[in-house]
Amino acid sequence: MKWIDILRLSVTNLWRRKLRTILTMVGAMIGTASIVVMVSLGIGINQGYIDSLSETGELTTINLNSNTYYGGGGMAVMIGGSGSGGQTATKIDDQLMRRISALDHVTVASPRMEIWNINVCTGKLRSYYSPVAINPEAAEAMGIKLVEGEYFSRNAGDTIEIIMGEDVKSSFRNPKSQRWDNVEPDVDWLGAKFTAVLQDYNNADDEGNPKEYEFKARVVGIAQGGGTEYGYNMYCSLDTMKTILKKYKKVFTSSGMKVDEYPSAIVKVDDFNNVSAVQDQIEEMGVSCWSMADMIASMQESSRSLQLMLGGIGGVAMLVAAISICNTMLMSIYERTREIGVMKVLGCKMSKIGAMFLTEAGIIGFGGGAMGLGISYALSFVINTLIAANGAGDSFRSVIPPYLALGGLAFSVLVGVLAGLYPSQRAMRLSALAAIRNE
Image (cartoon, rainbow, N blue to C red; front, side):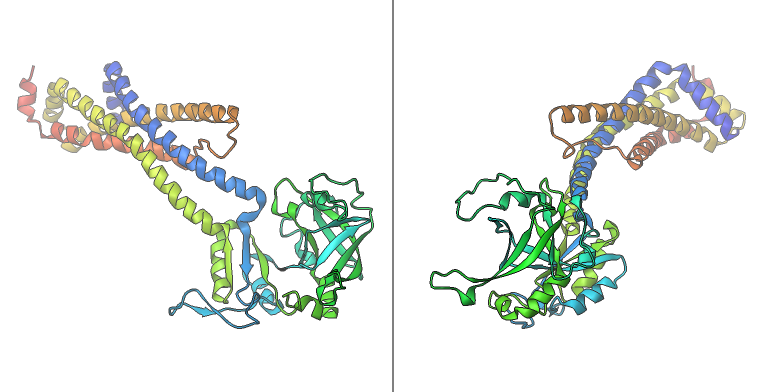
């Protein structure tokens, strides 16, 4: 008996008892749908969280924090624990940034220096946001999206160019007005004249007002706001700022700032899957750093536990389906005992008889799995529609990736085959003569 004959005979036998076959498939359908939908909810929660972070561009960002900049006077400290794994902290300076930039998968590495004692002014308005100095060529690569203007130019001269976040605009106010609302003033941001004011508290007057040094400035671009990190910052060119830092070194050092190293830095990686590897290499250099990969790894572990729990709930339904398939196949053996005896007398191999019943069980599992997938997609659509109608957004949804659909179908077939093992063995052990005499 060829395999095509076994398949044709199995389909014929199932069709002869189509009502029972369909009812058994319904059990497998419910089990498959339960597992797929339950697991899809866990995947959806995980994917929604990752998608929300992807929009901010944080997934491929590694943030470096200095262990020597604040209060250490350059003194080395130990990071990574006090055991054998600990190592001396390295200061974040230009030399280190060049080493990091040379690492594989690093697209850009830029220091970040917040200039605490510089304010930006236009007319009588002053913002108390401190500008953040970064490498001018890194602005676009860091994911700073502009809604107006352009990025830093290469020939800024002695003018401090500024990329201003949309959410910073409302921070400009007249210091004498005592106005503290968040109303955005009417300013031509790209056309107005700006000044950057450096405050020297070592040379304050009798009333405590610091001596001020003014520098020409202009806003070259407006960064996208809406709650993004870049919307709440003002960025200036580190190259231009270094000139000011060296000229007014005492003014900055008296405010606790250093001119030969940086308090923090940002590193962009080409792909999220490479973030952990790059982060490990940076930590081996003696720098503390963190990324969303740390948070996502913890979140994914919790998500896997949730998916296993939800999948287990659906697995109960599949267990019931397996019992139903086993019962159906046993009933089929009792009804076809004489037929089995005739096949044995005619010389049909035992393995072929067993294969026939396993094929029937597998077909039931496949049919139930296919119907279960259809139900799963329908339920997923309904769930997502109801969630969207209630304004929950993408934070909670059902997602059925191809691997889950194929896995659910394969699992249903596997359950069907396993449920048919005992009935097939029972059919193979039947005595041929006793089976023929059976009425």
